[in-house]
Image 1: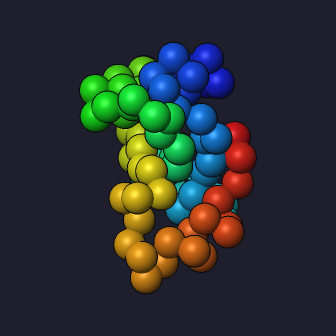
Image 2: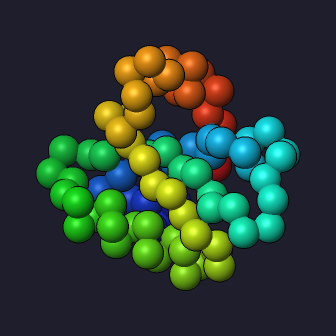
Length: 83
């Protein structure tokens, strides 16, 4: 996964959401948080999401810290765990 992350101009992949707490169910997506490097585009993020879905065989919800609601951002960032 690390090679995919770097190739798509992102770093620091972290898990968040139900998988983190062990309460995910069959059919849930995998919530991943990444930091976009300078120059990263929506094509990079979309490409990474597609590649991870193909590699992992589950839907992936790929987010950056900027995608998180300011109301919950600090809590989510504190709880997210590195992959």
